[in-house]
Image 1 (cartoon, one colour):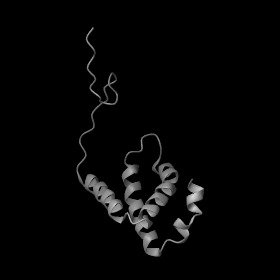
Image 2: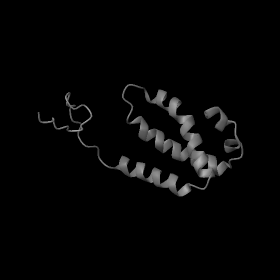
Image 3: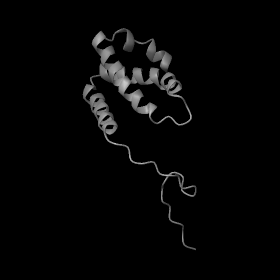
Image 4: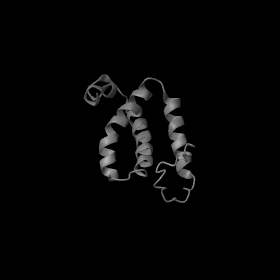
Length: 105
C-alpha cells in the first residue's frame, strides 16, 4: 500500500504548501508517539511509522480534511502541554489496569 500511495498522484501532485503542512503535522505526531516508545528506539519508530503517517496526513489534507487534521494536531499539542501524572507500578494480576472483579462462585 505504501508503495502504491507513494508512487501515486498524492505526492507528485501535492503543492509545496501541502507538503510543508503535512510535514508540520507529521513532526507533532511523531514527537508525541516517540514519548510512548517502550522497547523500540525513537529512530526505529520514526522509520517505521513516518512514511505511512506522512502519506496518510498528506492524503487527508489533499482531500480537504484540513480541519480534522488540525483538530488532531491541536489535541496532541494540548495533551503534551499538560503535566504527566506520576507513574504507577503495574499490578501483575491486572497488568492493563482493567480493575477486574473476580466472579463469585
